[in-house]
Amino acid sequence: TQSTRPQRLLGAVQKNATRGDPRSVVQAIDQFCRQKEWAMNVGDEKGCILDSVVSEVNPATVLELGTYCGYSTVRIASLLPPHAKLITLEFNPDFAAIARQVIAWAGLEDKVHLVEGASGDWIPKMTEQFGVKTFDLVFLDHWKDRYLPDTMLMEECGLLRKGSILLADNVICPGTPDYLEYVRSSPRYESQYFKSHLEYTKVEDGLEKSVFLG
Ligand SMILES: Cn1ncc2cc([C@H](O)c3cccc(CNC(=O)c4cc(-c5ccc(F)cc5)cc(O)c4O)c3)ccc21
Ligand SMILES: [Mg+2]
Image (cartoon, rainbow, N blue to C red):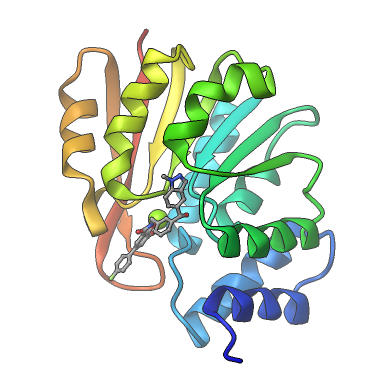
């Protein structure tokens, strides 16, 4: 039977990356996506912006919406301080299965809690299920029409505190117009656009960093 693209991406990691070396996992995926098959990872160019925001925030609690194959999960988790926790939500079981193996290959399973399920169902359960009061950093990379409703849901559930950072992928391509309008016009957020390119292409895209002001 035919393999899927995520399965072929995992194969490239297992073939070309060193177990326990997150940077080599990231490099193997980027090489696969540039040379073999495009895939919707945040990629190396936007990934450097992601790295700089994670390093600056130095978060103890991170929520990632949309794991896919675990590329950004590995980038973020490899930069976290010792007892920090990254919870990543993936509703597609096939993606989740691949992501678990990519995260394990990188040796980061102790820092990552991959939850199989939809953001709308799990955001209200974060505190009771994982003992998380608030998130220092949220990386949004799931369905683009869910960025706004899930941000409002996180506000309602009290998961954001004064200074929490939202970092959103694809605000230009595919685009998240209603989310952008909200975080850029709301007095409760201070937003900044980091211009970049759609992963592995010359098409414009970017990340929007928004600080929740409480
Ligand atoms: C509710 N809920 N809760 C958890 C959760 C998890 C998921 C999945 O991880 C999932 C599945 C399919 C699509 C996405 C969103 N990602 C994208 O659609 C995307 C597209 C492109 C692009 C750009 C140009 C193109 F020509 C084609 C694709 C570039 C990008 O970086 C993307 O992130 C995410 C979905 C809903 C979920
Ligand atoms: Mg994306």
